[in-house]
Image 1 (tube, rainbow, N blue to C red):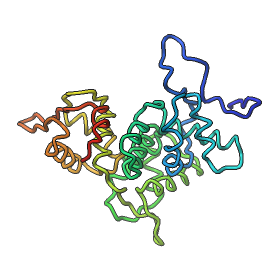
Image 2: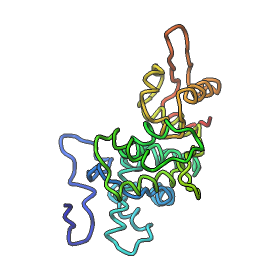
Image 3: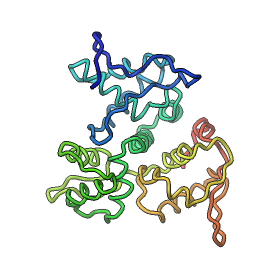
Length: 274
């Protein structure tokens, strides 16, 4: 159990890192990964205006907490911890805030935040990458199908509250739509620019880099941005190639690969769009 200091502040930021570790990134409280919280997507988007001007990492937690509506300070601080874990874990000059400062586009940012959230939440990530793609878009899905197959992917059962939150979070993130007949499988609004940036982020692209398409298929980032199958992924890669936002996409005999032309930072600085 986490011990709350007398001030009521949760210990998100630990003592200064040792052994030369990065001190421009927040230390993250590691909570059990067998349970789910409610996703705070809307809150994360509203937090951008408050977080973007910050220059001191030590101000991040309290700044995020101050913008939340909950009456309890402890609850606001706990939610601020979750926002940092999901969306701002790489600090004030990290991926999310860099994209926001450059583009100031809520639709793009929402797609970026979905990608970041699924990347660090194993229960949600397993469902989106391995369970939902088995279902045709538009089908009404029995909750037991989602629960059972997600649990198989994870190797453990979900407690009832986490099952409820799994469905609720998928609705909030645009992967399910509640209807009178049950939850219907749908695709969130697809943002090709967000997928381009997520590709470069997922593979740590800093400049020209050759990546086999098999490696791209194996990385789940593209499920997290709303693509549902490998054909859609290849259509995206072709579009990026035709737009000149990757160096080339080569398919020849058994060779299928892309070569990037710009690093992630340069794409963001140029406000590249697809």
